[in-house]
Image (cartoon, rainbow, N blue to C red; front, side, top):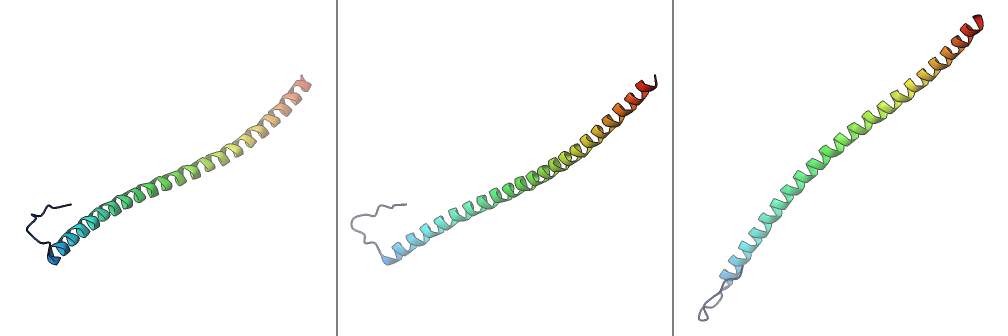
Length: 91
């Protein structure tokens, strides 16, 4: 923020100090606003990571259950084929 000063007025040390303090306050205020925004973004990313971890865990559990059930179905198919062979030999 630049202020125009009349040519006949001198800039005092107090004036410069006040301007520096105002500028510093403005800068720190803006940094605080950005810090708050970063904290909100970080919290949102943590929630996303937690949800992603949950979904990956659920998918892995589903995959394991699917593998187990596939083996059980395969075993049942083998037994059914054997029973059908035995039944056809009896007829």
